Image 1 (cartoon, one colour):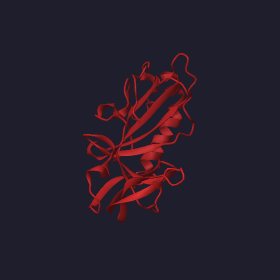
Image 2: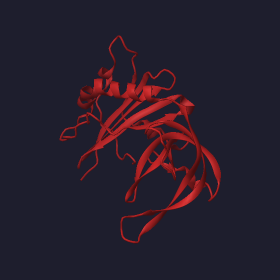
Image 3: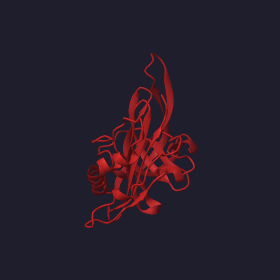
Image 4: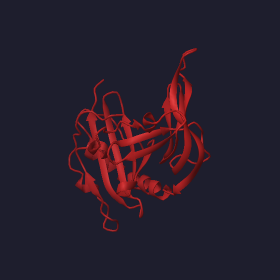
Length: 222
């Protein structure tokens, strides 16, 4: 999803932690992904590989909707291009949100569109081997806790006149690791018919401390 338009956000200076916590940097006016050329749009990593190529890919294990189904994927973050994805040909016995290193062979898979007899071709990585790079669940749990503690204040800070959009108590989280910067990015997107919002929490990969917080709401139209 590409964020369109500009964030309209008052100051978030009061979203800081109490004196007992490390004070995060609050970033306003743009999303975490605004600095990347493709914004929030995920590029497909396997587009640059041919059929039968062997490669290793690193990323966070997740699922993504494609046509009429939901398929496993590795989500990665390239420091030059931004968010990327590697579609997997196999479902792995690991929890969603695990940071993995996967070795496999590229292949083409036909995916039903839900219309009788219609299908699309999807380039996937047939998994030969995989391993967990590091347990990042403490960082994910820390981000979720930080969000719960700040949700009401974030809501107040990003409210726009005329908007009835409410930040969810239990968002559908998305996780990325920016290894080059030593960051874990835990965020979500929310929307109704008229407005959309983005919240990203950026934690230090080593200490799982909240470093930056991005939040914004914008008018997207009907």
